[in-house]
Amino acid sequence: MRNIKIVADSSANILALKTVSFAVAPLKIHTSEREFVDNEALDVQDMISYFDAYSGRSKTSCPNPSDWLAAFDEAEDVVCVTITSGLSGSYNAACATKAMYEAEHPDRRVCVIDSLSAGPEPALIVEKLEEWITEGVPYEELKTKAEAYKASTGLLFVLASLKNFAANGRVSPSVAKIAGFLGIRVVGKASDAGDLEPLAKCRGEERSLGTMLTFLKAEGVCKGRVRIAHCQNEKAAKQLTEKIQSEFPLACVEIEECRGLCSYYAERGGLLVGFEKW
Image 1 (tube, rainbow, N blue to C red):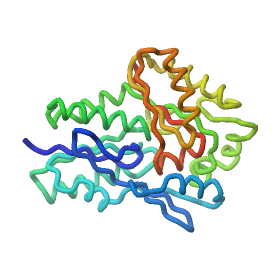
Image 2 (cartoon, rainbow, N blue to C red):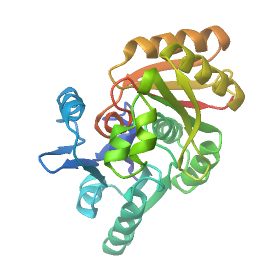
Image 3 (cartoon, one colour):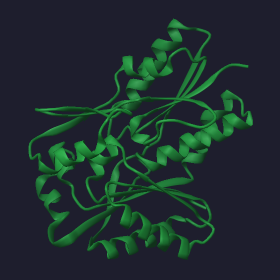
Image 4 (cartoon, rainbow, N blue to C red):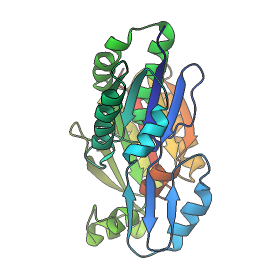
């Protein structure tokens, strides 16, 4: 039987899987002073504290081909899951590496899946792939099944700050000032095109969590999986979990901490919520 390996970039917040071979291609966060590599050695708390005090420009960079090749290692069949191509060049880099890898090893195969999202939604895709591979689903069917599954998942977020989005040039400084001003939080989602789409501005955390619940209900959440990733805000993650379980008692809710890239974009207090639409 051929070896199937799942590889994801670090936006998925996963370091290991239980039943299937897995590796991470790290994204990086740069300032003029420091570089943070989003791998298992990263001190996420140190990075968050650094950006709390830092006011200069910053940027992120996607895994390069050597990062992807190191993650592929000697796998015969590889399934890649990347952060949305709307925010990063990770998908394009993975596709370029696929061509290189298959040209060098004609007997090996790589498929690349653009999650059109970040954080807990790609994590749901990775874990569904693990489930299918463990069940013996043929490699040839995995990408088709993953693309269909992707259409039944979503991502919502609530951010208390947009400072790093502004520092990275992804929103204007004037827009960034809205978040955090007088307790304003931005609630939004990953669009079907893979962009981040603001949906509402809420004053205070309690109101933003209530708004999040309303959007989850509108998206079709009922009894599927819900994965909450938080950046230094376990209290709000638990409050949202209670609201979800009260509204949707059959839903399976999990809480995790954001790792490097997701912490950089979510910032302290932010929540990212991946979910199945059933």
